[in-house]
Image 1 (tube, helix red, strand yellow):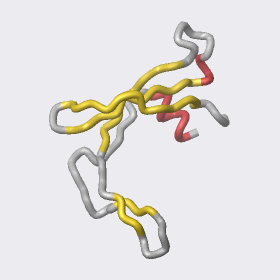
Image 2 (cartoon, helix red, strand yellow):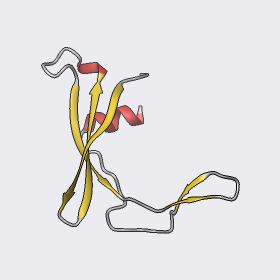
Image 3 (tube, one colour):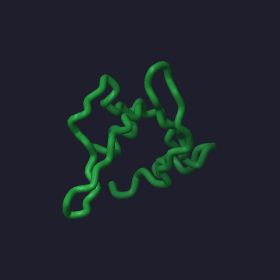
Length: 85
């Protein structure tokens, strides 16, 4: 099951109470015959962390910063199924 999810893009950032969420658009290629051509959206919590540069020039994310909204839960079962297949 290769390339089930295509055309993924963040289309908006918004505040949802005390956390930031991203509205993500994607296309499920298994459903291209539906009225939306397989396109759908999900909201995903965003945890913006500090980016650091390593001595070798690599970009690193500061993983030591933990917040309550660290977890990203995708709300659509089909997306979870696609990722885990």
